[in-house]
Image (cartoon, rainbow, N blue to C red):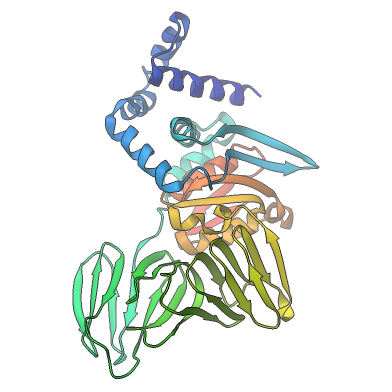
Length: 383
């Protein structure tokens, strides 16, 4: 396919230009490309020190040793996989990923020009820091861009800034009081509980917790999805959900417990125990799904596929478009429809930025030449 060959050639040219290894012929070709404003703007950003620093920081945060080892985007069709490109993720390869994503977005092919132009005028941005905090007395505090600090019952101090809620207290409290953090569609929030446990709460989720833990058992209540980094040596930590409880001592794990979906938990480090119809112990790298009827299914997984959202990435491995869009709909606050059931069942591999506009992901889909899309307001139709 000519588009794919030219695309790969241009990506290689950008990489060589970045490292200063272009041959004489390649320099002439590259200079021709830079006569177009879009390519020149991309190259100027690539050359800036800001780009290098941003990509280095992102890769260090992502932890390549645990991350999805390949960046690829492909679709399964009739038993064979159509691959657009594949690169090994590393600090250097982050440059390639950035170029590739940018080029896919700004360079539609002739076949999809009409659709892409329409989409370009209907950009849908990612979610942001926003939530509602319900205090002990039932009052509600909106959490968005503004910082705030307040005192809760019992002298507990609550501070909110840049999407982070933090609880601190100096004295013991006479009674256990609860707050509830509700994150709407298109939102996210990060909370540091009184014991130092860190919780990333995803879109369309709520977390109820004591303003200060007392005794040897720490208990919270989750409806939706969250990632927990539990402080050790402060007693047992229990996450209550409608489908069962997750019991831990000190560990990092993700829990997805949306009411209309099967519950699941993914263990990154430490050990957790699920208690429901069955009692199951999980080891690092394992995921437990709670099926209808309460039966459980445990398997070894790439944990980043299920908790990568916490680090700003969506990683999917052999997942249907329907499953992928279920997650993206909550983050981007969109609705979707499919002209045929077959489109919803198409399988993909991929690794995309959580904080990019959804149009970047849609353009990647369209480059497979198997799926097209149309945006009307906040509704996306696939066909």
